Length: 248
Length: 139
Image 1 (cartoon, rainbow over the protein chains, first blue to last red):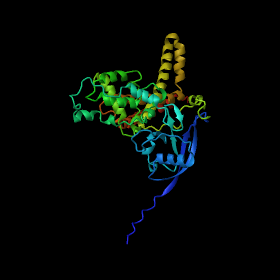
Image 2 (image 1 turned 90 degrees about the vertical axis):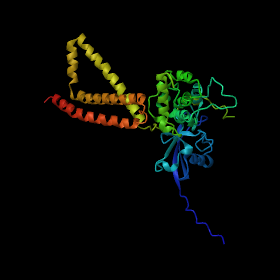
Image 3 (image 1 turned 180 degrees about the vertical axis):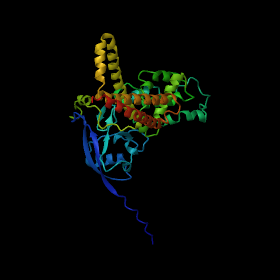
Image 4 (image 1 turned 135 degrees about the vertical axis):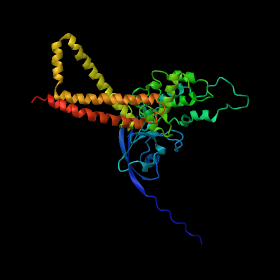
């Protein structure tokens, strides 16, 4: 006889309210709030709730998501007034006695519902030359050697997934779209402090601009918003210091 | 297709907005720094103008100075001192964030230190100022 496995305690489902800031460019002149009641489990994430709405209630709801596991950086959105990844925000960590407010990230042109035009963000990213620029060739068939200590210097800024949560949490970026923004500076930091790279001077010159690192007003919103836990304001401070000293 | 020919103009009308961003100490200290900074600027503007008046007409200068000695202006001075103290102390915090190696790490603690020192200094100033205000009230 097969002994019956002890029944798992049933996971309790409960109903939450999501207020989503909708914008359908075909019909709406302006963004509007729409309320949805959705049944979720405490193990669910905000992304699961959005999926349930899209699949079961309103197929027109639009949002970006790819990996759904906090790596691709597609689903950054403003959840209860703070930039978060929908796939990394558990429902149980939010106050479910109140409606949960979900809206697009701020400061980039709104395209549809929770989708913004990311192009200005990527343009700033490209401008800081986020790739290795080395003047010397490594020994044939060998890699470029780097000590553990030298790798450690820029370890934090290698974690960036380009979700734009930091840049769109920055009050300076909201009002001044020309500002490079925290993410571009993080990307620059990753190469400026890389001992194998030879173009630190070039990147420091780019960021020593009126719209460069000096626009940072140290509000620390970016550090708080980063889903990867990057100390973004610290990285910007490192770049400021490197510019002042004239070396990395 | 109606979707394909939807007016693109709608996009330019709509700007992203919505709820107030819920930042922490860093953001609110920056907001307060801006507000107190602008307020102090306008005070200094008026202050330079009224002080410059003494060279134009000492009588007019005296008249204006007398008009400042009212209870309402006394309360305004409390607000002014509060704004200047916060702006000065938080300015030191920002300098520490920029130039002290561990400034970024301790910014939150430094903010509450600023608030604490501000409260102590205001606690010393406000009672004295209230006595001054009451002495100006015509008996």
